[in-house]
Length: 115
Image (cartoon, rainbow, N blue to C red; front, side, top):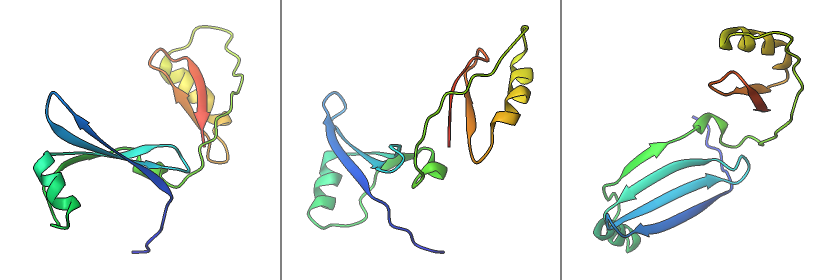
């Protein structure tokens, strides 16, 4: 497995009602927060002072986009009649070139895409 290095930002906050520590990691290039972790303050304190491998719960988001440049463009797609969401997705395929993917809303309306 090849290792890659990425620039990013870390945010650490304390959430009062639960008394938990929240840690987020954001990829600087794509702007995606791809790790959200939560842990008890006492476990965070132990980790911070060098006692490794403390318990936490974490979620991963959109890791396939980490390290990619986020670009947004607007493309006009003409619609003459009403179409189902599946028909709209099929119509958009000709616009999804060079790594671009259309972003589709539940209503079938297209706002923009991402590369």
